[in-house]
Image 1: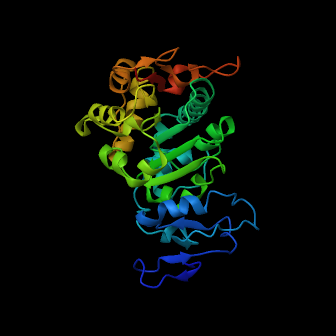
Image 2: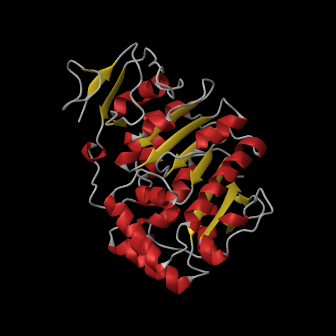
Length: 337
């Protein structure tokens, strides 16, 4: 492991390093990890400039951050257990996953060989949903819970292409997402992006986090993004209460964009694949369209075409689309009256 920058005197424990003033940005392969809670938003400001080239410079904000060059040494990451964010990353063709994640995904693909189609269609739905919210609904603030690992077409990239002043707060509970948070903090100069390490099962922690309140203006409409995350919340964790808590904190005119895995179109084959995830310690509960609609959009005004397969939600081309038995995910957007 290599640690970049000097150790901060009197600062956090165990190798947390301090970066200050000028200096070149870390090499692209460097993993950013262990950002302390108190320093995250200095990190947000410091990393808001472009850090994409070898000559990228750090802003003169003081940030507390650690750089490690081996993923297996990122603190807090259990590489022996699969995590939904990393399994999803593997299924959409990403590179941020470990053997345990690949193993559970590959076993699932044995039962359901079309298993890569749904995640890819879901990712495309995310892009269309954000473009609708930014370009047509006029939303300039996003709270993206269950962010997953950075990939091309993240929420802030799409939204800020429409409106550079857009602000985005990302939330995930996978330490590897925290390690790659730098890619989520490259906001346009006019806007802001931030990341908090938190769990959807504790919505008040998300809403009360000082960083959430610092970046988002809760007097103005906010788009809550719960894309491909609610199926990891079983009924025992009371998902409807979680959604109500989050939506209850948002003002009138806010939106919810959500998607959810279903077994309606391929029940026997898909349910065996889902049991594979559950046996691996990944909580998973598929729901049908009515259950998903009640869970996510109760009391909201649905944006046409309503709750539909993610591949059918405002498609941007007339090209043939996958079969429902391959897509296996519903999506929709609702507006809070």
